[in-house]
Length: 169
Image 1 (tube, rainbow, N blue to C red):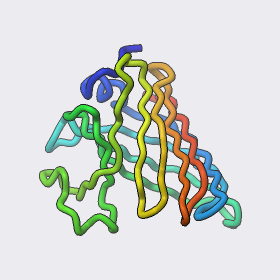
Image 2: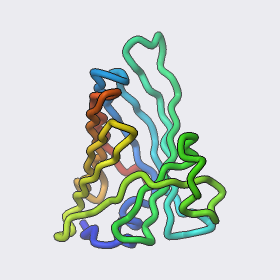
Image 3: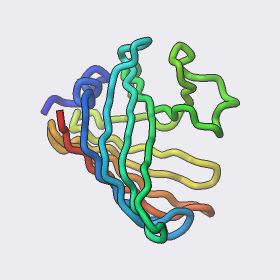
Image 4: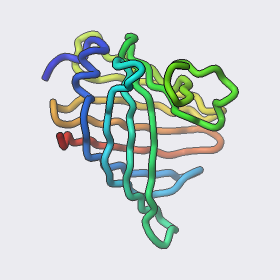
């Protein structure tokens, strides 16, 4: 597997479609359940170094009578190092200027992907959401799979999200 030492390397690694399986385990502020679906990383026409992440899947949560469809967007700016991940069209961030105003969506900062210097494909990061601290890691396991996992602790939330991705094309 190529070392993930710059934005171009990460862009080349992520580009394409992936199956995604997530497990949610919240003790406070969420639920327990699973999501199964497809995630894609596609270049933006306006900025080819920027990848749009789109996730669609079916989510089953304890307490819901039937599964629901889930959808999520992120933006990966591989033109900077460390790569920056942005929220897309987050209604709580609309008052902030868009970080990439040339895109047709509003972008606001989420987390940096600061990969270790050895290029092993591991990045750790944190995001403070009001008073809840999200701590996570991205780990490239092989050319065909990676993990993107989170834990959250704070007054409103206490839990974890674990996700595994397998390349489908």
